[in-house]
Image (cartoon, rainbow, N blue to C red; front, side):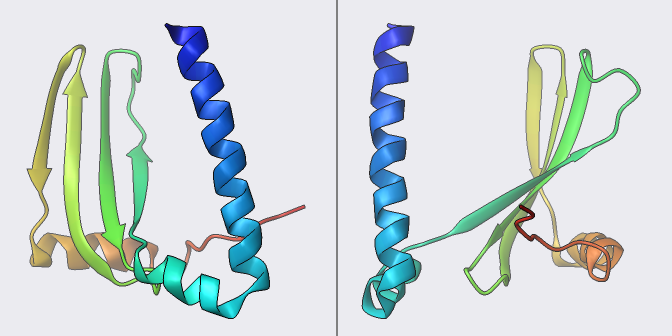
Length: 107
């Protein structure tokens, strides 16, 4: 089953790359694509023993980078919980990253 899934994933990735190439070349394709797009960024927080415990913050954004929702995720071993992050908490988190974090492709 894993090999089948690998083949399907490879094919899907190639299809997605083809779509991104079209988006990069055609402004209409880009507009159509981004109207349907949502972006999530997961920030993995440092822990003393990541094999036993982990936590992260997941931000859901529009293509413009506006956060529409956020959640905190915690796992200890196999146990897992996700909690919503309210606006007050989100302001603290965003304030911690606003001047120091952005995405760039480095060749």
